[in-house]
Length: 256
Length: 256
Image 1: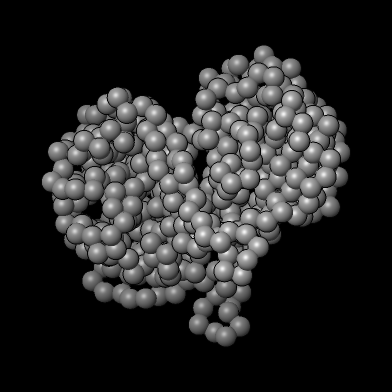
Image 2: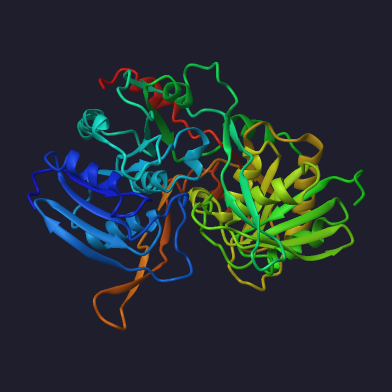
């Protein structure tokens, strides 16, 4: 590979065959050398899970024109950890998760395997970005995201990101987009989360996750859900430090 | 059940048979009615993963003296979601994850299934606490944690916790403890994360997660790692909002 070009490490949670990740590669391959290390199948909703009990494997899928693709039997986070320690021969300039088929705004950041990739890259000291579209269609037309992704990637390659801080970028379901908004994470809650049928063999139910997200602050115009609901691309800067500083001060007065 | 008593929902990531969760139940059962909905086997490192592709089941294990135990085929977060929607008949006063066999301080909060339980309870608007001991011994003596856990649970039942804020409590490996410190999450990074052997059938390696945590600020005395390294029980208040507010302001000046 031409070591003068930036190196971008890409993973996702939909697997290396998903349309979203392959579209992302095609959007960026003239800007950088690209290494993909992605799960060998779907890993949606895996958050920052790691494989702690079993072994994992990684194997080469293809290599051509500055794009090298590996598949991995582990979680999205495993992919990043394995890539950084066993696959790449220099530190990537950027880690990207996506393009995810589905919304990772608001509290979804906690469940998202895409954002697992991004948090892991960020924890390793590399500028990291997640891209997601609010649509689960496996054959989605990602074309409208292309100029936005290229601009955001270009800006981050140029400016970097602060330590222990990454970007969670979401696209509305429908294009054209009205523009880009830097947002905070929306407060809200998933509810009505289970569909069920009686187990065919008796003895209880089988449950499937489903549900609706309730935005607890629909009037606030500075949230990622507001931006997405109103046709804007949302960029939610996201940090590794989850300390609740206001409570930290208060706790010092509690009696333990 | 006596509806005058508080109701505590307990889960973990080591499974309903682990010593830690059963010790926790025994420490608290005179203080509250207890419902356990815990994974049917080990789910360490599952973070806030959800089961998005397959169905899950939940079934009664035992019921006696105010303690009802269910096992669930899903992730730690699935356990909490299923418990709240299909098992409990009133809103729990508290959700607890643990007692985990292993350290969940510093960046481990992102990988921890125990903290997945806690974040989920918190996202559902219920005061939530994670308890972990920095020791993986499956037969660990949890006795020294008992008075601390009872005091912390008692205080949270009495005072509640701020919205979208939970507690991540870790105990040092060795007792007696020097006391309790309210802390912030330590900055640091896992490294040397993979052990490998050649695959017995050839064609590559099998990789197992391992590694060492490097504390990037060992001199800071206000972090959870410092507290644990110096014999104190650490309480790290933890929040759902991961927005990086300092970068949010800066991003408004970027050109997208």
